[in-house]
Image (cartoon, rainbow, N blue to C red; front, side, top):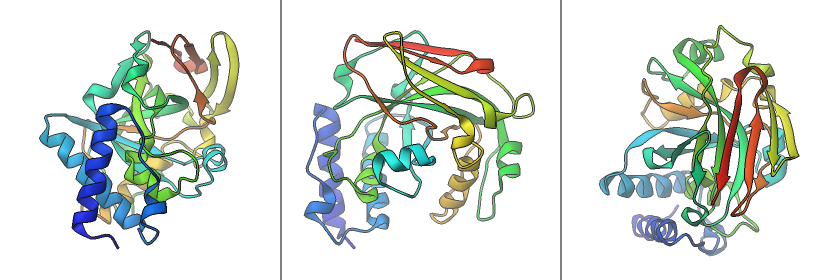
Length: 261
């Protein structure tokens, strides 16, 4: 395991990379003995510095929950990170490219909790009962660590590669729609690039919410009412650049559009 001084130093590197929109060398290349526990310690230290600087936590992201994303990254277990209020955009917004080191888009559903949710034995039914509503979302991936050769340890340390999210306008309670079959048709500049259905996320997109509640229990924490949980992508990531128009059709859950400027 890494020492506290090493954890502090890496967290500071990531904070500086976030500030300057740059990337740092692979953590696992420099610290081959680093563990998954170390990576969550790094993420937690970075999170605490951001909270101390005045940012407000609004929720959590879950990543690597679908075969599409696991095959795209070579990483075979889910991970999670935190989301701050200044990273939330709405459909129709312009998203500044200079806020990120690199920009990729994923198609997801987000869930807003009406009740707290805790492990250790949280089930899909428990998660559905705690969810107020689902809303379509695009996640903006942003890596502060070299992309080539990343492992789960690098990704978790880097706040699970979360950059921002764009939320849609249609809200659905879990009893109003079969969330497994919500589609996503993702286009860039009018050309379809990726398609998928939400069942690709662990069989049901809310399964990830239950997984996260159980994972949090291992750290003596729980998910709180009002938090937004970004449940994981059911498409591969799509690269975007300045000037790109992004559009995603979620069928009965409406559409999301945004422009990268």
